[in-house]
Amino acid sequence: MRQIVLDTETTGLEPSQGHRIIEIGCVELVNRKLTGNHYHQYLQPDREIDEGAIEVHGISNEFLMDKPVFADAVEDFMSFIKGAELIIHNAPFDVGFINHELKLLNKNYGQVEEYCTVLDTLMLARKMHPGQKNSLDALCKRYDVDNSHRELHGALLDAEILADVYLLMTGGQTSLLLGGQEESLQNTVTGIRYVAKDRPRLKVIKATDAEQVAHEARLSAIGEASGGNCLWENLKD
Image (tube, rainbow, N blue to C red; front, top):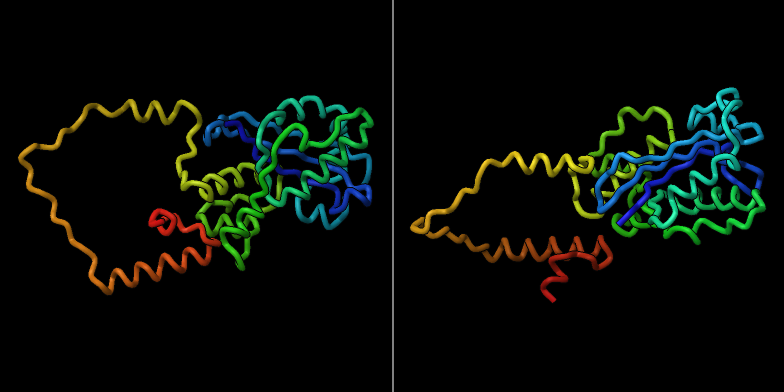
């Protein structure tokens, strides 16, 4: 399974007002492991960047003067994401801007949804944590992802952070080793330890009635908070 975690930075908030993409950052996951492959490109937008946007990402008009325009980067970008599942936080924003850029080319590229499926981690987080803050910063705090090096927004940096958050949100994956490293670590095991046949039986301590009641109450609370997606409740069915 190939997934691309994607983020963009833009000149402003609305493509309908002529705003453009100025940075694209993507990191690749294959079978839920970071591969080390990424796509990163700054773009010259043929317009001024809003002051409010500069305060968010710190990218200046002067910095982008010698960068390629989207038309010059589109082939490499579309080739990198084609056939993958895009993982994006607040996907309508980024997808809307990408589709706007494709439309401006007038070359029948269509829309990005014709090349990829899209998973919106903001919508996923709202289902998992209803009534709570679900910004990327809030999720980093909730899942103990270190984003202390993130003073400003940046497309590639935010994509890398989102990859960590997504893996933790969707399976408790905490080892983000690049392909091959995990296997090499597993190969350091020197032997197999067998349990003695005559070992004493393990003592089974059953839950008290009070503990069982507390357990059921906790499962009910988890089920309510997750919209009926409590794994242990489902297993009882």
